[in-house]
Amino acid sequence: MSHKHRETFYPEGFEGVFDTHAHLYDEKLFAQSEEVLERALKCGVDTVLIPADSKKTSTLAVDYVQKWDGHKGIDLYCSVGVHPHEASSYDDSVEKFLADLAGERDKYKIMAIGEIGLDYYYDLSPREVQREVFRKQLKLSYELDMPFILHEREAAQDCIDILKEARKDGMLLHTPGVCHCCSCSAEIAQILLDMGFYIGFDGPLTFKNNKKTPRTLEVCPMDRIVVETDSPYLTPEPNRGKNNEPAFVPLVIEKIAELKGLTSSEVTRITRENGKRLFRIK
Ligand code: NI
Image 1 (tube, rainbow, N blue to C red):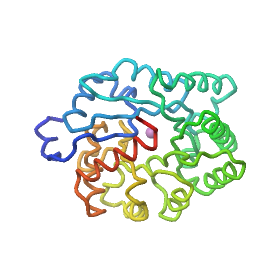
Image 2: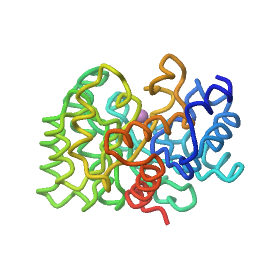
Image 3: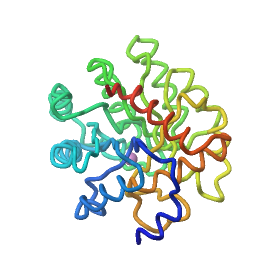
Image 4: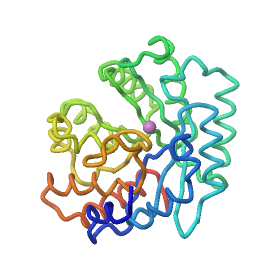
């Protein structure tokens, strides 16, 4: 899309936006990395966390940060982990690989384990395997003392049960992580908030037919909200149909500002501070 069009949607007030979830190594975006990062900066997005979803993309996320961190001043971070879709690929050697990478967290700017969790919507790995791999990576997050990025879809109850079990075993951090791309009900969000989670909001919050996510946002105190794109997916209104990219996260900020009765610059500042506190960024 042209800059002219985009600037129509981004007035002043978006300085220092933190997109906490963008798969920038995805093939839909990777070939235009330079343009994607420069468009982000132009829209005020100067900090991005690149989450992994498999052994392969853990390497891609790390490589991306190595290559592009600092480009025109952009601040990039990443995570390593195996998504529930890929749970069948998880074994001891993958676990060792992730732990070894995370052991070099400062060098590689790895701030979290993830995405991990349960996805019963797509069921791309057997549910029993998903649960087992989720438990293993929860343990990894605890042992490494790193927050995790939770992916949960149509699996809220099992997810909560496993988290409670981890907490009972003393294996859940005080701030366990973020429920990314929140699609859960207000009731489930409240349980996660009570466990110390942050909640990540993205494009679906802006969808006109989505009544559920605005209700979930209502129960979230401002100091527990982070913004994300999940690029290249979940493009916010009015850009649906295009690939998502960090430059579009101000549209999510605008929606939160509207629903919470704040200014965009307040939401920008607060969500940035939250993201940095959550991922322990100095
Ligand atoms: Ni994602």
